[in-house]
Length: 225
Ligand SMILES: [Zn+2]
Image (cartoon, rainbow, N blue to C red; front, side):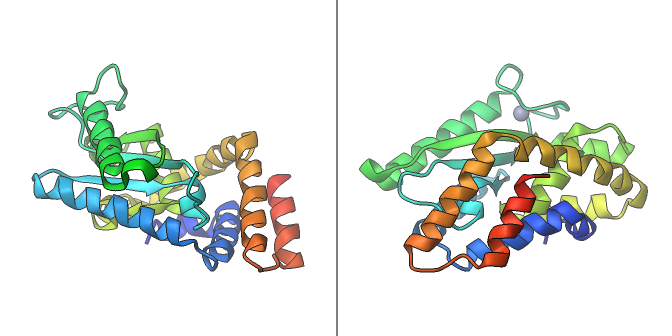
């Protein structure tokens, strides 16, 4: 899934190639964390609401260890009909669901819990609106296109309905595609990102696998974009 045409973007293609390699050596902890998020989606679903996530960082690469943080993007419908960014000042649901998530995972794992960072929250009502009015300047749509191209979705069924709607608007997609590279440069130039790659290579090699020479050089060229 994800948005097919964005996945042909050269940088995204390269990123996903690396991701695929690391995921072949996925840790059990990564799998367990994915299960945690699926369970949470079901919990919210049983209350009659919708929530979805994109997992970033080590779980996205299948390289989560016990002490790894889990970085997530959260998708929800903001306070009653509100159109605008979800942020802590204007949105009560972001706070509510974030606390619920952190508490339910702490409860599930007790003394073996892990830290969760909600790095972004996308308001689904805003996505709907921006697609409908064809907002060519929508940052929410750019971020959605970006996360959906590189991350690991939880409750993908919900996200897919938005992908479909966006994909059916060729012209809007063209606009968004132009901004994807900027999102990437922001990600690549944070030192934390390159540091993560070093960690992932170490983990795979600690498990007795050699990262192939061509993969190592791919990683280096990727980081020097
Ligand atoms: Zn909100």
